[in-house]
Image (tube, rainbow, N blue to C red; front, top):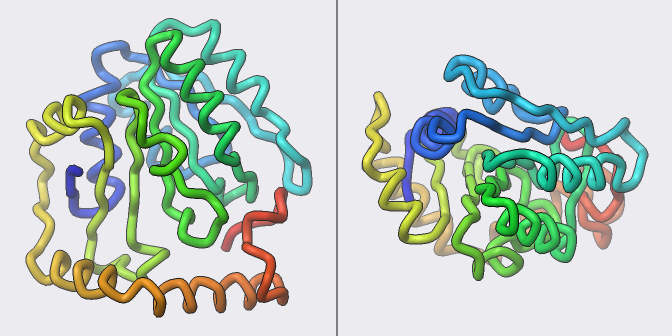
Length: 217
């Protein structure tokens, strides 16, 4: 695990440490602007793969796989669930993508900012691979946007590379304390997440991202 003062700082470290060597990134779009913004600042060659309009199912996944099969070794970046479009890649799709990335020498980065509100466990699906980086921000799931704390979860080999890079700002002690206290109360957190799902969709039993094509707020 590598901590950083917010997901923007972590994205910068990932692109510097892992993207600069190949100079290429395959990006699921639309996406969080930070990925394309920081990639352009670092002059990475960016291949954008549109995932389709809202209210469509699975559009763009085949194109994402095709780009990964044709490209030289790159960073492959997806946000799951995808906030702008609401698309969700399920466990078997993630494993298929991970397999393709492994075969063609790519590093797969999964931005899981909204994963707490979705029926997907990235670590359970992808934790056995050593070419995966999970980017976990606590701004949305724990309401810690002001605390500026994010973490990458990856193999020890990649974690050692990431930890060699220093960001401008360090994670504060109070932020780590807040994170530790909140994560020690999983039942309360899950109850809050279910309430958020219910408020967005009016259906307490339906996880927010089971319904593909909905927009995450």
